[in-house]
Image 1: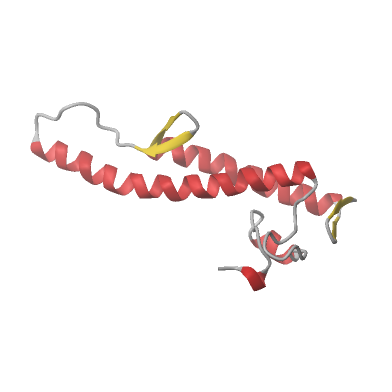
Image 2: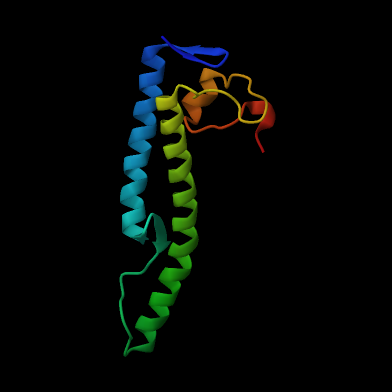
Length: 124
């Protein structure tokens, strides 16, 4: 068993949570690539259409797609970063503690949201 501050997760539980995080990360990478483009280390919303549009309808479609993709990619990138942070905590053996109070995050909560940073009492 890996020791986590005030919590002991079995190797099996830890592997299950790592697997869930990895699967969600892979899925998000696909979704991000479908709705945006990576510039440096950050993702930006994008549209399929490139360049100046001769047809005003095409230009309007491009603007509408961007208006949808920019906030969507922003939310997905936020979740992606939470997942990366959780994976880093697993490697550093600091995973499973509430960032607010330091108490253990119950396994059931981690199972429901493996990237959870806080216990239920400190959920915003």
